[in-house]
Image 1 (cartoon, rainbow, N blue to C red):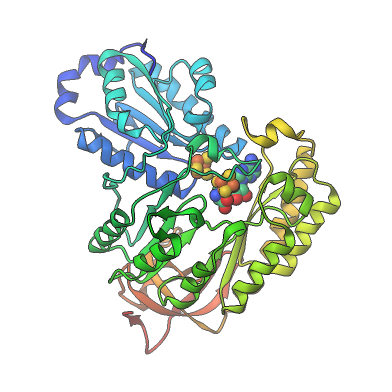
Image 2 (cartoon, rainbow, N blue to C red):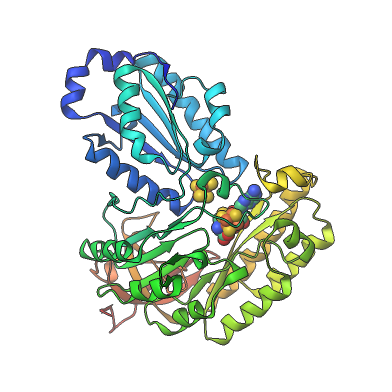
Length: 464
Ligand code: SAH
Ligand code: SF4
Ligand code: F3S
């Protein structure tokens, strides 16, 4: 931890007795993956236990926190834009600004050097130190840094502070030991470690008692989950056996070590959703070898075949275009496989070189931005067409959907997902249902990302 003085925020100086009584107000924004969303819930819990409060209005805040992502360059750029906004505000009226998460971990020196007005930098394994660091910054004007990675920290005793809602996320493990050559996560989140199953199951029961009906278990590679005699398949089934849940999902299993027992669990357990996110990244063997993914195109296809043999399990994937040295022909191996596979959805990314990674050290980032962009769009367009066709096939059929909340575009409509994780939107007037309930929806329209329908007549609300 470094102890550099910082300017005392003027407003805090003037109102210090008032703020002490009401508790310092924190405004927090979260970037990145579901793991970061979950960490924000942990941070809220840690801070509230020490008397800090959260506000959704940034103008009311004494402290601005960003929980950041480092996975691609555009994640960095987004954060820099936000930071610039608060730098000006800090000058006007005094604020403490903290950067947490993967970018804090990965760019600590750079951020400290280039942005002297950041007061606190805290990596994903050091959130227990955050209350002290922020108090020091607020009351003693000290700059704080905590970026040690831990082999043990799982925050297992901390009850995440979550909002309402029927969806719950639980990180069952932290870190990653896979070191795919393009990926920064092993450097930002450190070594792999699993939480004990008892704590996880307790958390699931608590969530159910708060009204959660769908749980998603999170880990960078859930296949690596180990705690004594427990592996991930056993954990998943135990979670799905907790009474009161409608649906259980998980993300992500790595294709290199997907266990047969996990496939059994998905195929057999009635509430484990028949949907698997199986990141391919590339379908060319030279690229896969360079990426350090640990499987070949053929091995991936053998796994897919085994999965599809089990029944109507829907697959989604992640892809990277323009990785180091990727030729047109190699790109087309991926393009053609995506065409053949007919994923329900694919998240397609332009390769973005990340500091410290194996690829950054070993391979030149030699595909031009233009070509990366072109290839990425090609696959996005192809996948849109495939997703549209798949969704259109639901028109005239009924799907079971869990009501999750208001649709993004209108509070006159409900939004939920099918078991296959496709978004469904329908008018509320058809049924006075409540979030968390399962309903049958007749589909009458489809886009690549959404199904539109009405509550099925004569059926409506269903308890599972
Ligand atoms: N642990 C997960 C992936 C987490 S990161 C897994 O292995 O499945 C989510 C996705 O971001 C990755 O699957 C990959 O497609 C993409 N990604 C990671 N690093 C990237 C980089 N440097 N450039 C572009 N995309 C990247
Ligand atoms: Fe990154 Fe690979 Fe770990 Fe996923 S498995 S987080 S892609 S290193
Ligand atoms: Fe997630 Fe981004 Fe970190 S994807 S693990 S928040 S680098």
